[in-house]
Image (cartoon, rainbow, N blue to C red; front, side):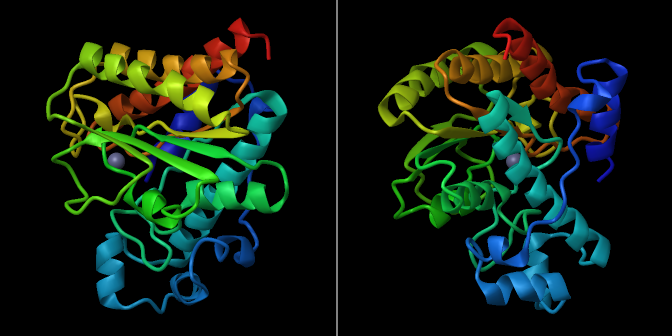
Length: 283
Ligand SMILES: [Zn+2]
């Protein structure tokens, strides 16, 4: 998809970021991916030997270039998480592949970058408790299943109830929303849960999936956030975490539209809000 590089160009053109604030990730070592995914699945995907059925469930045609992009996006979320520990706040320009399960991919998701980043940072002794705040319009079903019996990673998913996936998994906290929900009701719901979660868990790191498919113009979403509402959501999550002293690493999540400029503009809300929070709190 073109949106990843276009997003970076847009942020530079708007001076939301300068070139010195861009960090280039590389692919992680294969064993890091296998801390979350089964070796059989991870290796079959990388080598292009997954069955037709397994590839159909992912929904993207296999190619060596896609393997490369997938692994680098995972590396990007790991890097973002480490930068968040260093700076208090960091954002990926990709990531949020939350429908990937330990042994299969689905819904355009191959490897679960959020889960891998949480595991890598835990294994490296950088964090203990992680909170995943998944505000993509679709439930973070893969992430929920991966951490189902693991209290060290709390999964919070706020999503449209009638949207994909048809069969939901159980997150530690699921907030299913009615179709067509608009800015005020959506933000009230978020504000009713996030502060309590932070004070109860006191996480060493928050991973924030800022899926832009909650926007009213999204092709696959079924919620009705405006541009302003989306910006307010990103600003609220980031400022609430930062003000309370919790490092927050964000990924862009889903977003689907024919109008590429409009889509990139929606994803850029995350980085614009981050830049504003960064300046306000002088991180
Ligand atoms: Zn989504």
